Length: 221
Image (cartoon, rainbow, N blue to C red; front, side, top):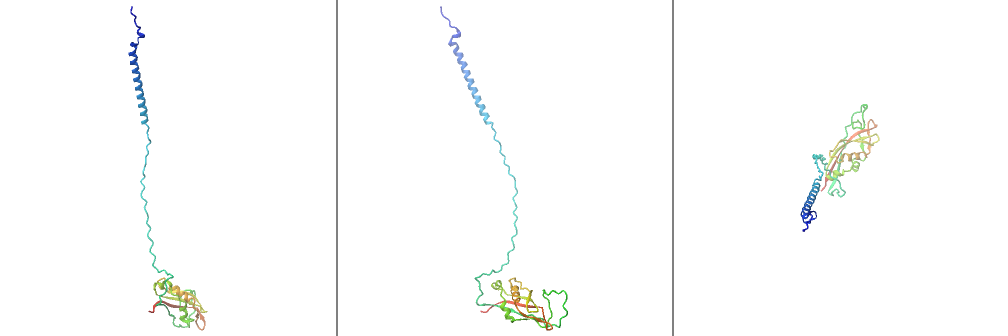
């Protein structure tokens, strides 16, 4: 009698079925792995980078205000120690007394008259400079700037001579205009002069007199 195999224990019968199930399971595992990897990759790509905005503000250019240049200073020669008066040039200062004619006896003095400002006061005898013009020439100094620039000038200085023969005040009656010091030099010298006072009825009186002074440079070559 021939033996029969039980289908439950037949390996050949179950081999093909088991093989198909294994292949299907492997394929499912591969597919699931593939989808999982793609999902992670897609998730990584969804990361957003914050956008940085740069705004440029339109600032108008600053206007530069140009100040006007200061006016040029007048060109005035500046003295230097190295400069000296040439040997062929001498300084000449001329002075003249301008005394009014002797008037008649004076009227009574006017009230409120300011003796510190130049005005005519009648007298019998004018004041006399002690030592004459030579005394004034010794005291006069030629302004340094004018000398080095070769500039000459003429000024008229009023001098108030008191009853004791002193020069108590000076006033510029006519300026030179060059502003180089002619007026100051003449006034300074006249303030040092001693006088015989003016006389009025044998009595000394305080009077004003005008003294013109001319500053010249003379070439003796």
